[in-house]
Length: 114
Length: 113
Image 1: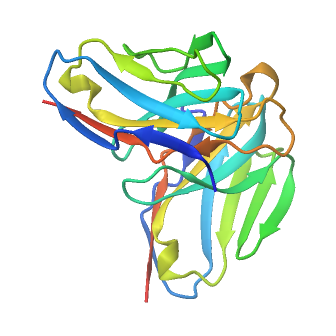
Image 2: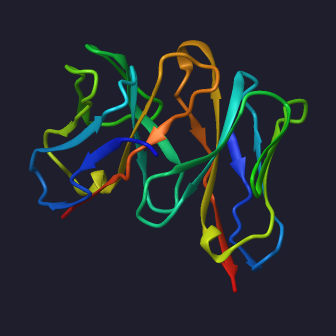
């Protein structure tokens, strides 16, 4: 079972508010990821990190930002939320080596911007 | 063209049936493939991980990869109502791209008693 935790699970906020979605993993994984999933649609990678102080943007453009100050923590921030940011955000992690590894997902954070 | 195309479904089968879920992919750089199961309002749960062409079996689940035709499948034997979920296939390249998965749109499966 994956030890990756996301908070909050559900959040409804007003337009223009700043929010931070938290993600923590206790597996010591070097690599962490944020995926975005709209209802009924594919997951798309929006951010990833290969280690502390390493962050890159994913394939899907996102107005969110991330930071990786500690190995276990990979928060995502929206400075000014808009209704178009309404979606499910999924955090994931994996070990650095390739063979036989799995990519674990958290339970997700459902964000609704009104 | 999407890099990973998944049969959209939805699928509805009786309990005990054999289920076949299928995906095709176009990115020749994909080296490994994963199948995830996702229940409503939950994160994806890894079911199968395959790194080469051929079959891989785990309990009632069999993953099949044919890299020559860029086709991947998941078979579920003796399907149960608890298997009702959305199934996601994903492909990924190796090297520095490891972990950057490309997902299909998912197939909704319902197994009715």
